[in-house]
Image (cartoon, rainbow, N blue to C red; front, side, top):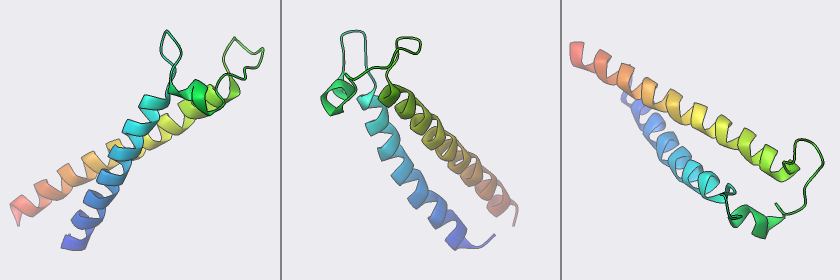
Length: 84
């Protein structure tokens, strides 16, 4: 595989790592959280969770899947680069 593939995965991995860290910090803990500062205090009546918190969960899962795919892709690239 070409070297630009590895560089692309590394850049994507760094970006998703920073995003994942920020998204996790925005989640509400037991005593509130940073998400309540950004409008997470407005809640809907569905299961006691706010709409902002549900969207934050979706974004966190999406970014973590991209992060995981980058890790697997780099591992496969390293394995193929090792054999050639």
